[in-house]
Image (cartoon, rainbow, N blue to C red; front, top):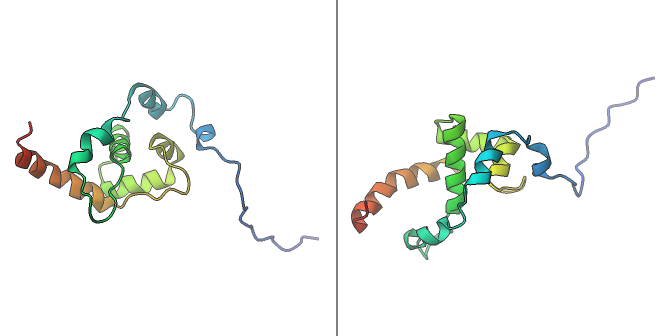
Length: 124
């Protein structure tokens, strides 16, 4: 006799590492081995405001943009959806399963604001 279907219950704790679910030969592993974006924050602190909402980590934004360029994801909205769903992309962006994904307008606003900031500061 077939019993009733058991409803799935959420576990209180998970023993899950994203690292274990990214193939060793994934292209993002190779890229992660050769880039170091740890100094990005210090170079971009002058562009951050001390008031208002906290800004998105510039290293996270750069890693997400790299994912988009390497994987051919042209839409910022689609990029945010893919990073939300794909474990390899989350791993490369140094995000955990519970970390929130930045909203897609954040990328557009920063991309369009960057040329204005360069002009204001007379940077190359």
